[in-house]
Length: 258
Image (cartoon, rainbow, N blue to C red):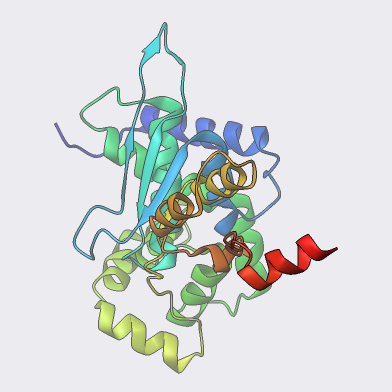
């Protein structure tokens, strides 16, 4: 069943988002790209270019007993999508990590949680007041998108959820095509969120480097493990140890003469 959230669900999600912001000391702080640091605390994260049409992200919860997780869950973030969409995906997946999957309407709950967590209403009003010209325009919305590092359509819906724009105004703003949104970003000189296509396998590079430095794996094994993250030993300042060379006959003669 996929329906609109009711008032009880919205209030519960708001409470959850506010509680988590307090837990991570972010009540008076704009989240933005800090979301990835929080995700890293709560999960093993793989960043991988899954394709523009693939899901923005997904979570694999590990086994639990009595609602207690014994291991960190795995989260994948699709780096084929723009950076602001990756931010939203990270917050969306945090909902699944913290609150699981309890209902058929879970995706809408996760999306609303992400919006509340990334764009706190108090901070949104403060930022809008600083730039208010009496009317919320495309330019002011895109500016807010840049400040909070969230997609345009997320910000438009957030402005409606907080009562700053009407349903009709929201519909008009959401009807603007992606191509036109890009044109407006260029017109007003805003940064264009782009896909970075990065490949990061949690802390695999760090673990591989440490294992090599302790003599637990060969240089070739190190190259293989780093290759999974599109890295080379040189990228992390590790040079291959020179191979042992046997002394020449002349060198042996010289040693024997001493």
